[in-house]
Length: 395
Image (cartoon, rainbow, N blue to C red; front, top):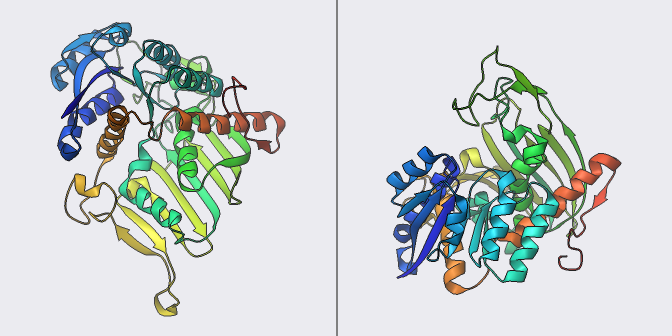
């Protein structure tokens, strides 16, 4: 059994989810001979750091994230801090020779993501990025159908991520709504998942044309010590201005010839966590939605007209990774199971000294698409997906 010493920076909900996932790897992937040892956690709020230490069995905790990076026994640094802190932390970890797992979008701008990716390449460190939706067993199943040619030539792709988390005008004005803290809004927050899924299933995006909109322009200012990012302000609270976008819609052309659309929105009513795609090919079609992640609709006509149409398939042990969590068909997996699969692959990268996907190269790929979308906002026309900084190092 090989043990990888891990440090986690940022002990909010996502940091806790990552930490639990590391602990689960030795159980769910016991035969692979890998386990994570949680050495140190960091959060600038001491109560959060101490709680994570007590709940999850870290050996130490700190309020200074640099102590995690400088710890001589830690091999892998997991970054789940707010987006605007990622660059400094990731570059420091890379400079210290630590392998890095960073939650998306990695940088607050496409250029920051490119800079971090370049630094990791130059240093020769291994990386991973939090793009967990691609690990759903039925998403893996869909990709296998595409690779096997069961859908024929892919002609259409529609990807979206609709969430209600900011649909309430009284949702407080956290850093996610401020351009000076997070850069773009929903483009940086959840579009990386949508673009990565499109790349994973269909291939590179070549051209884009996008638009954006802000539906809720004023929100209550946060009250220190009261609530979280998901908290609701009071009607009489002072309000501040939202400085980034709630909605992005994009027309896309794939390098392989497929045509498509990508949509993301944080201020929409109805969908709770609708990370979804619909794919049409010359021989068949697929539909999947994370809200029902253990189901997929597949259309593979067999020339029997009487029952031709989409069929619903339930996830089961015949689909990738499912049997790691339960042995029965129709018994569902959850969000943190996907995180466990994700952290296992990061640890496997380190043990095998092999860069697995999705790493910073995949983050750079979606950053290039985001940059082209942003250019199209200004030019109001199609923009090609082109290399970012530094131009001589990354393609």
